[in-house]
Image 1 (cartoon, one colour):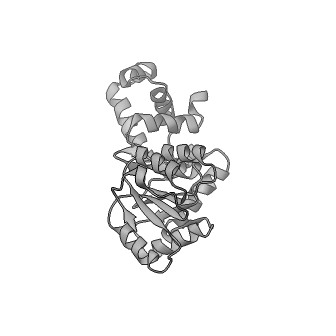
Image 2: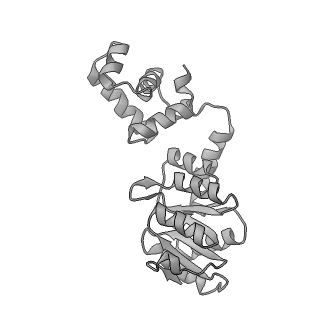
Image 3: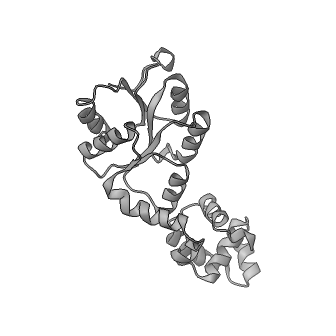
Length: 228
């Protein structure tokens, strides 16, 4: 049973409960297919915000929490970390249509038990959910190649910035931007025009698939560029 609007105060505290971030009808179809064959799940609650997810997690005993990439533009990676701090043994998975390698790095760092691809059929999604509830860490088949590539980068030598292909000058521009300098300030420090720095900034963001300065800074910190 999927419940979207029942007041949290009236919810029963039951085992085998799923909390799932609502992002369309596909997951509803997947859950319907699966719940018809596995009656052990007592309740499935649709969640539409980080606040609601944290509240529900404290009121019920979810067997699994499945999060989208974001709620109203707010990344759910930090939500996953907050949930794990509240309950270290809580099982958390993510589901999405597609994800960049950089964001997937952040997601994997939060140690989810699984990743679900909305590009797969409802029955495939349902089977992955079943495996997660049975205690098996599982990723949708279509995500295996991307996950293996990212895990290889994370486990290997710290050469990821070189693998991505930034030039030495682009790394220097990135370092200055991550330190909080404006485009004009970077241009002055590097004795280049502001137009040239803007061009470097555009190419850097395109290569890294990053679209805002906050994540650009996080990337620079993670890659050790600010230590120079």
